[in-house]
Image (tube, rainbow, N blue to C red; front, side, top):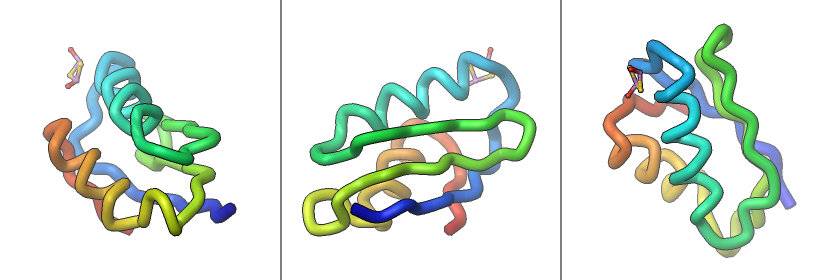
Length: 69
Ligand code: 9UX
């Protein structure tokens, strides 16, 4: 288990937050996702042997946002 914080650019409303929540929660062994519109961060608890930080970032990018660790 690992806690990763990723900075996200391009979130402008709660709908963006919901989209990111949804894509991240679909990934294997992602236990907890918290996305904050105010801070522009996602905090994710995950098993890095199943879902790596790069995979988390890729999912955010695929959803149309800019992910910076
Ligand atoms: Mo809000 Mo975000 O209308 O992709 S959902 S801007």
